[in-house]
View 1 (tube, rainbow, N blue to C red):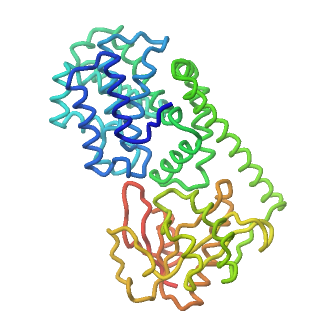
View 2 (tube, rainbow, N blue to C red):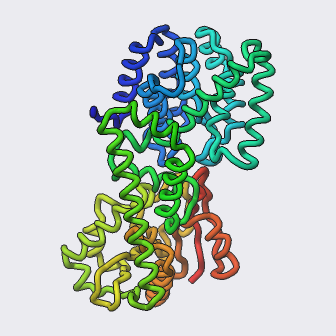
Length: 438
């Protein structure tokens, strides 16, 4: 399968499928380019580390066109333009305050965007039908969310002259929406191997401010729901896709399930006291060892990309005399390394440009990099132990303050417990920069 990693290559693949399916009017290409430009201009292009970036928007559009000849729903030429537009705009919320687009925000944006309205009009596309298709991608499709979406869908059908008194057409559009909703959920996982899927899971967790300990079990639950509750449509779509894409999807599902099994085994061993997590202060001799640096670096690479501070000089920084490092090892202080905490003087770090730390340059603040643990060992309190050991070391070195990044709700809990304070808040990820007195 051709590499689809870049916006440019994905755009070309989509254009090729559009030509194949008769979507050759200039307005369709304009919709595609306008979407790419708008996401880029709002900071939601390929550099945005969140699941719902331009890559996701294009992947869903690509797969929806690629599998369009599936056998379950007869999609007419008229339907194709609606499916294309709905796929392209389904998460069209460039001014988002959180990563997961809210369907209401998406609908408001596409309703009010003048350029978009012009493009839809030039393609003779009924905006109300587009709204219905987007509302049908609401996830999860149950409970209050489904109920609220169905109320809005009913309003859209009433507003549209095409659908107002045409129950058969309404049902047909809802079927297309069902197809789009499943494509929305599996597209990213058919277009790459497990490493891509794991990166997507980390992106989703980081952007939604999830704790790392729930990533694997949430992924397993997600895939089980697709396979159990969306069996018919999932099978139909996968059957239509190339063999390699089907393999990508099932390899990913099986890999997450194996990781979950390993995670549960670790939790059981810790619970039965067959396994101990030992926080260890590392001496300078160990920090000079290239093999030690490589082991830490391998764990470091498991962090979400925005949390990989100083990646270029990571190994060299371990050797610096003012770098504080402690590790989390299995069973004893010579055991396998499964995590580490690392930091040093604030002045050694180039943080996000929005941060204005009043203590920078005063040499009274230590910066704690994001804690790093191997996947499967989160949630067992090993991270907390490493963090407390790091704080003790920093205190003994006469630092007055510690700064770091953490989830917003975690920082709130530390305000009273540890005399912490917010220095800079960041949305949509809610992974904020804070300070605490030592």
